[in-house]
Length: 542
Image (cartoon, rainbow, N blue to C red; front, side, top):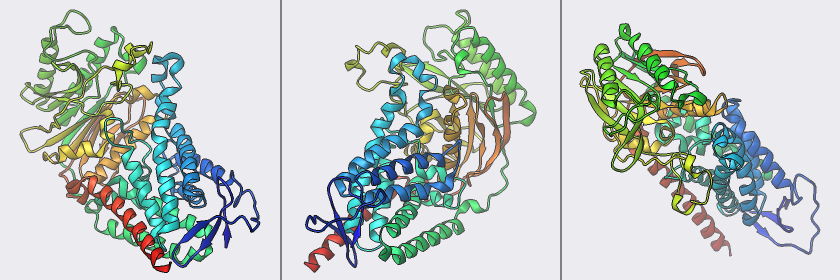
């Protein structure tokens, strides 16, 4: 018998040929030590491991630590009863998300005064249950599912829980484990199953390591499981369409004007920003770009057909639009300008698309808004909150617009936060998008890890979709990402610079065809199947 660390009470684990069953045994003494049998041992391992897991992301970028950190988490969950694992998972999740989201509070925290701590603690509390559920269900999987199915089922439910906390109007897709691996040997898996499949593979490695550490009788099956993951990753790489890329031939550009957040919204900065972006764009004429992308809300006023005037209180919106139209016509390029728009529904974060003929051809409205920043859920019930007036009151768009330049280029525009949602991108792929254009303003997060993590997500979108990505960020990081996740051009943070380069045709990936949900459903079904097999085998033995 193997004594392990329960969180509540004394538990003896009896290894069976196919599973381990927890039973109460008060008659026999249990020898304890801080690592294997104390009530706090599993919790301490989980907390340290969750903190270590955050270092897999930028700025530290220690991507290889992810499976080992997950091994510590799974060890603490496998070594605990399901209920204890639930609470251990919640506490570990809070630590993980509080550290991973620490950059959320930069700039935004100052807007809500003494409530600033909630810009980090709030999202951490909301997302910590995903760890708690994964811990509880993972603990059950290890004890019930036979052989290697237990660790695999635990990894599957971890990946599913990660996906579930990353979707919907309240979803937060940052700190997905799979995204941290965009430059590693598992990246090719994303072309087949998205970041969720990569997360599953990383978690499976961690779960097998934890299983072997917890029970020596499982070393052989864990070794076989790890070998299977190596085979799967190798096959994905060999079948990856992005291994061979045709030379890109379509010229595109993005403009990074480097207007800081602390001055951007000042009335006096309007003309500075407007003049800078026009001048930097005009200088691209010799590059002959077919598409020029500006960052999110470069024009800090509405460009729509409402009756208000621009920030200088003198020039009407029509004159601004005409100015941008002439610029697009001069370059003979599609020009995408980030601004705001009022519609009958309310205020939108929008991109204004000017065709090469100088006509305002389309307006794309951001569909996925940042909760508690661009909109406040249930704001009618929080009228007492003293800072409610400084929080966003925007409304989402509903149309997954695809921009056509008339020469075969079909662009999927994405604004900031929504580029992190693969299901949002999938709607535009269904409409035939051939490249992704991400317009963002990461200046909100200064020089923290935020801009780097957001840029890393663009790499994952490129691998998943097989599309080239053009990214324009107000203060960085701007650039062009190839379908294999490599930056072909990259402008650093805090630089005033243009991006000029080439994109190519899209590649057909499995993920771009099926989208994220079939992968999630398959992993959830696998978990249920693994436990069903375990229950059936257990019933036969009794």
